[in-house]
Length: 446
Image 1 (cartoon, rainbow, N blue to C red):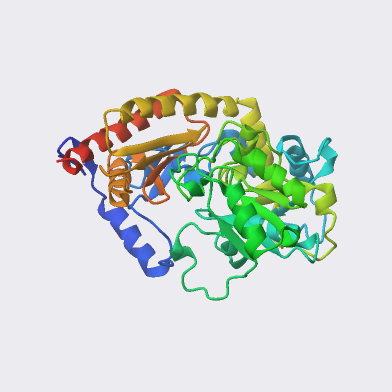
Image 2: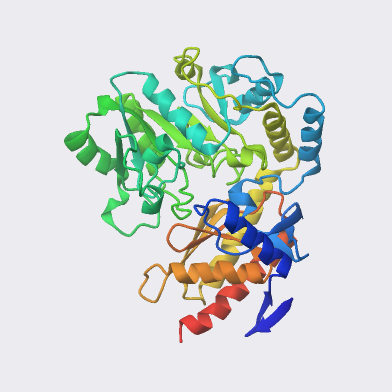
């Protein structure tokens, strides 16, 4: 049913949608963070339909996962071809050519410090971004028994399993109620480009406070960082941060881990976002967009680092499942063949330019920032304070008007559509977003 009110077109959920939501609430964990009642029926590319037949532009991409969009024919074909061969082998104990093929493709695209030739790069496969981070932390600490500590950043999200949670500091609710989170982690302020305070000098903070007052640099195994903070609010770092951080790590023999779970695999117009700053990490954690919706995680490192592990030091029964590896290999092929890095750059630049023009006459927008198709729109009140309730209303009303979106940070809306999104689809989505912001501002700024 469609209703109109003050310029909005509301798509009222049918009894069918309501019943599915009610059934969900009876049987699934309440720990999920659903904000509106979208119940999916099917999708293609950057468009989706709910069980009531309503059409939406997808600016969420399954939390920046669907890099090649919904049901890309080459992804579906790769999945079917592998299903017809075999579904599982257990690559912990046997050999899997789909894993080998994917690892060889990753050698070609992942930036790793000191790897001058592709064969100097090795990969460990898991099932998710959290597992990729867990493996990265274990691998870094495994190098030297004396180096037990890790430096991470406030605002960072690295996952919710206990090891990954130890370096996560995005929202307190994610850590609340878990008294035995592993230690050995020092959190420091993230040097956001948009920061207005002195804490934006993360390198200075590490040198003056962590190294001198808490932990000697020879006890630090690694620094883990998102090139662009995702759940923290789609925040870009200062331009000088990564070159300085690389130099700091090199000076003290510390490994640099890039958490590229949300920002990697073409999301920002580069294969991996850290490439924007001309820096190569020692370990890369990759997931989300790598599998085009199929669960996979990858921890990629220099051969000299990865070969420190011995058989049994780390493994996973389902990690690098042949179906997931086949899909991930096809994902890399599609991104290359269809010019999706270029598409992300082109449409990302268009989106940022358009929203910055819109921002000039809409006071609720404090910040428009991003790279490629990883863009954040932050909202604030007249005094510059975050207004999460307004951001939530924007997301809810976008949904009611045909646009799927997600929040990030305290009051940021993320724009992270499939990399296959077209100019026309992007324009439609932005039309809805701008309309919603303008209408909600009428009440906010009275």
